[in-house]
Length: 70
Image (tube, rainbow, N blue to C red; front, side, top):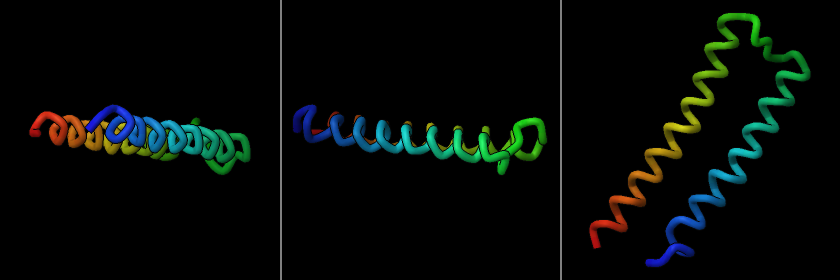
């Protein structure tokens, strides 16, 4: 499998998803639905960011393992 079948979909998925994630975070911060000066809200922001990066890294790891095992 080449780059276009493995990494390009990954980049598209997390690139477009990341843009949507950032836009969503900006909307909820600007609408004051989420206030970063509240400690519980700040914890949720870091949890969401960590979750996005965690799933992206797990996905990348599995792609890397699958490519290396052929």
